[in-house]
Length: 131
Length: 222
View 1 (tube, chains in turn cyan, yellow):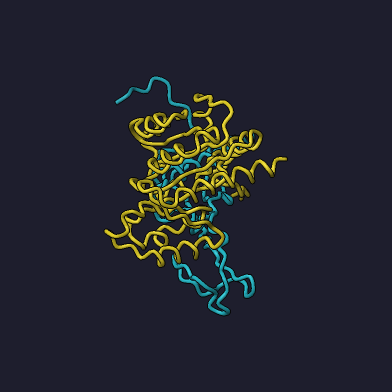
View 2 (view 1 turned 90 degrees about the vertical axis):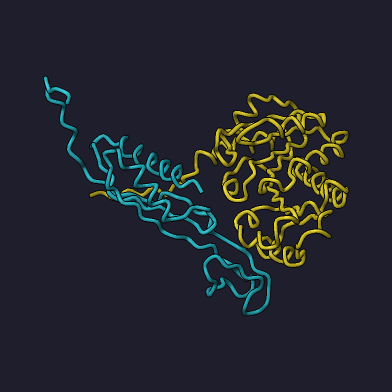
């Protein structure tokens, strides 16, 4: 779907929190996202997009972790159907034949991040010639 | 190294805009319907026929999303209702912030039924709440009977599924029972309407559904 836009927004959210802290500057080390089965976001593409997003920033090298959240099919009588293959949809409860509901799988969240203090940028030396 | 808890939805900004739209149309008791489908499923033609049948009964306005041209909004305007075209600049779905801006520009006034025709796309519009009362997924009989399971997210999210172009059934392979079964699996509590905007089949049911939902929204507000 919009992995680049999603990655950029996730980065903006983390960076904004870090920039608001008075005791910085901080560097992002790891960011953990929850991605749901029905969110139309592909984790591998999201990781590629993330690398592109952080490439030209001081957070280059920050690692994106994706926690996959499956949708759940549940029967009112028997509870969650455990043996569903990813991407498959069952019509009826395999145990009792009852109707199944779908829950979850909509997650698209920034869960947490880790950061470390980084050295402030050195001031450019006076008189340096551009090459 | 410090760990910071965030737990925030990435689409939070869009959802806040959608909440604004929803609140506005709750106050005005306007039914807002978000139509989603692949390109060419017949959304605009369905809306033309909807307007033709309902414009003397309820006040209608439309918002159309496309990456290029104003053709869809022009078609709906020719049916005698105000219609605003959002040109998304290449974005493959409408989002709530675009809706807020469009409503500000369009200044529709008092409306009973706001028809939102999303950009033709079965994937991306699914997760962008526009502040609608419900989503409608439109699937034409020319698209094959495997589409609901291939695109489960939108068929699970949409409360109503319209199976369009039923006049083509004698000419195309389309196992209706298979499709109905897939849609009901993904959305057991949903409504399905089979119709043809060309012959009029099913359009009474479709229009009745809209009026029923509008009445339910008004009743809930009383």
